[in-house]
Every structure is written in C-alpha cells, then in structure tokens.
Amino acid sequence: MLVAIVKEARADETRVALTPDAVKALTAKGVNVSVETGAGVHSGASDQDYQAAGATISTNRGELLATADVLPVVNVPPTQDQEKLKNGAVVIGFLRPLDEPSALDVAVARGATLFSMELVPRITRAQSMDALSSMATVAGYKAVIMAADHLPKLFPLLMTAAGTIPPARVLVLGAGVAGLQAIATARRLGAVVEAYDVRAAAGEQVKSLGAKFIEVDLGGLQTEDKGGYAKELSPEALELGRQAIAKAAKSADVVITTAQVPGRRAPLMIAKAAVEDMRPGSIIFDLAAPAGSNCELTKPGETIVHNGVTIFGPANIVAKMPVHASMLYSRNVNNLLQLIVKKGEVVVDRADEIIAGSCVAHGGQLVNERVAAARKAQA
Ligand code: NAD
Image (cartoon, rainbow, N blue to C red; front, side):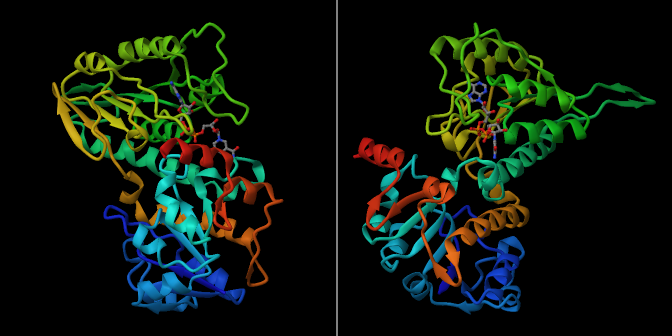
C-alpha cells in the first residue's frame, strides 16, 4: 500500500499534510510512503527528514498521484491532479465539501473515496482528529500577534517615568476555539479583553480567561444546536448583536472576529457604520474572511484601510505558521488514517461513526446527504 504526499498546489499554502513524525509511524507499520521533493520545505521538513523517516522521495508528481492508495492533502487537489487518481484511491483533507462540492466532481467520478477533515464528528473519540480546532487555535493566536505588530500602540499597561500607558483594548467576536485562543493570547500580552458570543456556554469560558463577556438579551432564543455549534440567527437577533458590538467597537483598539455557523455564510457582525465609528489607527482582524466575513467592509485575501481603520481579511492565516500548523494537522490526519489503514490495507468501515461522518464520497457516489444536497444546490 502506498501513501503519497505531494506539494500543495495552492499558491498561498505552506503546510504539508503529513510530517516526518507521522511518516515514521506509518513506515514502521510496513506502509510505503513516497513524498514529492520539497513537499515539506516550508514546514521545516526536508527531503532528508522524510527519507530518515523511511519514505522515498520522488520528482514525478504525476506518478505519485496515479499510484497512491492514500493521498493525505491539506487543500482540495486541483482538477488536473484529481484526473490522475487511480480508482478507489483514498483522499483525506480539508476538501470543503459543503462550500464547493463541485470542486470534487472529478475525484468522485474516478471512484475515489474522499474524507473531509471538516466533517470529522466532534465527539470525544475523534478529538485527536479535530483539525478544525487545531487550525482555529493557530489562527486565533496568530491574529492577535499580527494585530499587535500592526497596532501603533503597546498592548500592556506600562507605568514609566514619562507617565502611564493604558493597556490596549481588544474585542473578540465569537468565543469558540479561535476566539478563546485569541482572548488568551491578547491577555498574555497585557490587553484588556471583551468578548461576545451567542452561545451561553461561551460566557463562562470567556470569563475564566480574565475577559469581560458582553451579554445581549436575545429573549431566551435557542442559539445552540445539539452539536454545541451556533445556530443561524434571525435577522432581529443578529441586529441586537450588531448594536452591542458597535458600542464596544467604538472604544476598541483591536477587534478580532471569528464567528461562524457551520455550513452557512459567516454572520455579518460589524456594519460599515460601526467601522466608521471606530477610532483611527484601530484594527479589525476578520478571521471569518474565507467563510464570507464578519465585517461588511472586509475584502477576503486583502488588507484595506477605511477611515483610518485597518481591516485584515486573511485568506489562509494558518499558512503563516506552517511548522506548528503542519505538525498539528499531520497528527490529526494520521489519527484518522489509523482508522482507515488496517494491517497495511485500506479498509473503509462505514459502520464506524467517525468514518461515516467524514466520508464524503465512495464508489463513485456522494455518500453524505448534506454534501449531496449542497452539490445539487450548486448545479
Ligand atoms: P465555529 O468556528 O463554528 O464558530 C466560532 C464561534 O462563533 C462559535 O463560538 C459560535 O458560537 C460563534 N458565533 C456564531 N455565530 C455568531 C453570532 N451571530 N454572534 C456571535 N457569535 C457567533 O465554532 P468552533 O470554534 O469550531 O466551535 C464551537 C463550539 O464547538 C464550542 O462550543 C467548542 O467548545 C465546541 N467544540 C467541541 C469539540 C469537541 O467536543 N470535540 C471540538 C471543538 C469545538
């Protein structure tokens, strides 16, 4: 059985799907691993590191794609790569099956078995495979570091002989995995932090990190689904949130936005008027930019300045932390692989809840109902 690792095709990608540590664990079990030359170079993994882990190095990408039984990836392979896959090959990665299912058409038609890291169920047994949480952790940290670097102010309270410098004020919108990491990072740098989330459970977590939770009375509205995620809110509830946010944003130096609703466009949380009420020199860092943005003025993939407010809309912020992002992602993928590779063979046991939840396509068909519905809607 061959596991192949190729260079990510996306221009702004620096991560690699499996690092040498994971390769070593696979080769120790008798699995053959072949790596495209240079695949790990941005993640601190050289060809020699992969060779030392027992992999072979190849310069022939086409051959790797055509012979792989398992192809762990970070992003959806481009069509020209999918066209080379052999029938029955297993592809595992962030395949964005609910966002752009048609981008997988060629692989599905070729009979590939596709696993989406986004759809790994968030159950206790699958925690070690939760790549969304891994990447959100990296993103939340990096957003604060980049904002602190850009802010023309210091973050901590400083008492100097020349006078006292007040601490920076950071507002975090969405207190899930990325938001909580952003709060913790901003607190470590000495900022005063406020946060808002629609899920009541988030309030306690925010407070436990030493930040203030902004309470908004949504009239007892059910805001959380049974999976612990936020539900899509009514326009009225969203507007109540926006009003509270606009008020808090006026005195914020940095606003980090992370709010998302799985399978939906990210909610609009900061309207243009609220940006125009913010202080010049302040920053909005929109981590929801790839999912539709939380700020009305965000331009995904760009950094713009509006009335003196800088708005970052990074398209792939985790790629700015490739070593640790790859390390965590590789562990997540490898843990999922352990469920699929048994005694050196690929076994797709769809009676397993994790396999069933994350499997998008098998035997030439979309096998996930939500993905099939999303594909129909895209037709
Ligand atoms: P996410 O990336 O989907 O969303 C980020 C945050 O945005 C969430 O906290 C959400 O409540 C919030 N949000 C959405 N719409 C909003 C709005 N209109 N206004 C304000 N906030 C809004 O979520 P996530 O960070 O991936 O995870 C969210 C939840 O899932 C958390 O409770 C987390 O603890 C839980 N979780 C559980 C597991 C597990 O059990 N294995 C793993 C990871 C996360």
